[in-house]
Length: 80
Image (cartoon, rainbow, N blue to C red):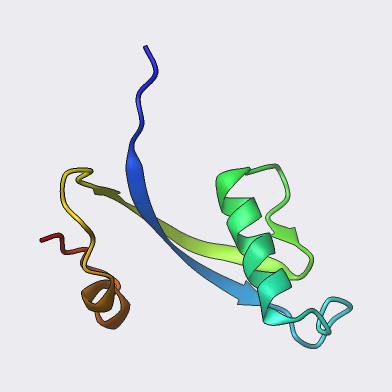
């Protein structure tokens, strides 16, 4: 049986701006951080991006997410 779980993922990462990968724009850096989080591998650093912490909050599928509250208080996920 297939099931679906909705989550909000918070990724803390570092980007080496002085090295070879320093000229990447922020969308490429964020895509790399998301890729490292969702598809982990044996590399701890990819394209100058290092993942520090990942937090996953499961969202109740019956309630909409209060995105404004999440933006201003990212450690707490509120649903209404």
